[in-house]
Amino acid sequence: MSAHHCTVVDIAEGKLDPAAALDFVSDPAFGGITLFVGRVRDFNVGRDVTGISYDMFVPLALNGFADIAARAEHDFGGKLKLYIGHAKGRLGLGDLAMVVAAGTPHRDEAFRACRQVVEAVKHTSPIWKQEHYIDGDSIWSEGCSLCEHTDSAHAQHDHA
Image 1: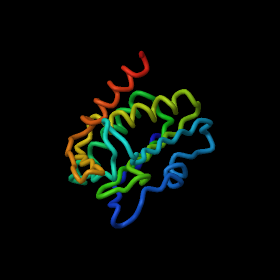
Image 2 (image 1 turned 90 degrees about the vertical axis):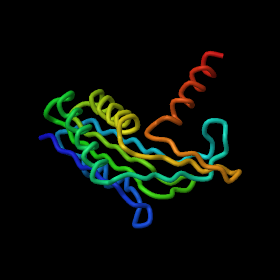
Image 3 (image 1 turned 180 degrees about the vertical axis):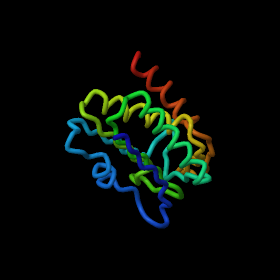
Image 4 (image 1 turned 45 degrees about the vertical axis):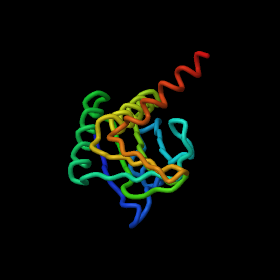
């Protein structure tokens, strides 16, 4: 019963739809459904952000998403539905960048599958991210290189 849907939405043509993700992973046998929605925030790595541009070669990104879904299906067994969606193009503050949903018979595996997929997309997908700052500057990064600095900053702050 494993199934997955992977999509890239060009922001010039539409937006990611969390309701579509929930619909896809819903099943009468599933008591656990999780949804992750990643949005563009206004501050990162000590700088005020005005937006983000995501670029990718869509067929390669979709192949990578399918591999990520296949790995989750292997790790979590037969009863799993996954939805993986990512935006492409110039996003403004609050716009949806990523939507991941997981449906399973039980909540624990739904949480774990969703988290595993989100982290794999962020850390392994061939997606290039350009952050735009309030001072007019911008920085390109590949994958999650900017978020590693943020994670370290949060860890240091949490232990202060």
